Picture (cartoon, one colour):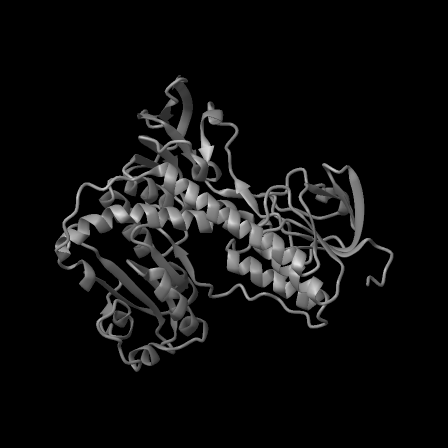
Length: 460
């Protein structure tokens, strides 16, 4: 039972991964907890992000697998892809997972409101659709992010975001995607793999800004090998509707190029979903991008209000939000203040081939330390040696010269996300190159290259 005059011990706004984890753990500790979710339980990851996107990656990768199967002696007819059948199966699985999130909350004793909630004070939340207020000793904001729409772009109303790509009525024949981050690159590969004429428009020179330069170069190369038309050093100038009945749009670029497409997608980043949330009324400070300012313990500038996940714009990954949610519970209800460790977090990008990365990039390491050693290899994996098209793999180790600690590992190639999960443990533990070398290889595998690289790469 609550030991204070509030309706709830904890009121969480947002039923994504971070909010759900914090709410369930709090309820299991005997706290009276409520969660408000205006869309569907599960958040971006389950509903319109990681999970359905990974299904789309799987679907699109089969086109390449069918071609490569010929090298292994398989003969088959011309494969056909049924977008409607796949889309509906994907949607059914998302529905199932969302239902599990909702049941897990209610089974833990959490009261779930399918409603939009806004903050009306340091201890007060208003449920918009029900038009009533409730009070809580602690408020946790876990509303995540939302796609950047670039509302100043003429014709922006004719473009969609990544949110809508999972629900297309038909598979487009031509698609133009704006952006060069991981979401843009992943969807460019997805639609190219599904046979869509795909164009990616990026303002920079090489995609995946912020990643290691060798990863960026490899992914850029992979896009072109997948027959994605990559146009760099320019952005959209305007979008026009050419044929409403056919749904044909025309994109004019700043460089003068004109592109026609059935679908135009803006994948130019995500912003914290704080607009209209009423945080100012409680004294919660936001940064220039609208992210909630928090300390190491996820405390905002308002007493009793906390925030976790993408809405804080720290490291926008589902597993990080989950850890932040758990750390919040330890800090507030567990009497053991615990700050989530945001260092050395492994990440994956599900391009084709995919990326696995953890730790320092080469540029970061060179800036921070006096001397570093680089080990790098590019090779053809065994599986792809006798196939057409052929596969390739890039592996790179960033090592601090002084003590030979492996600071970063960067992979591009099949199974890179699976490999980096295990290698991330070694990098997190601060293991040295000698300890990598002392580990006996598992043969024949892709990952054995990580423990057999001997020659350093000379600085350019």
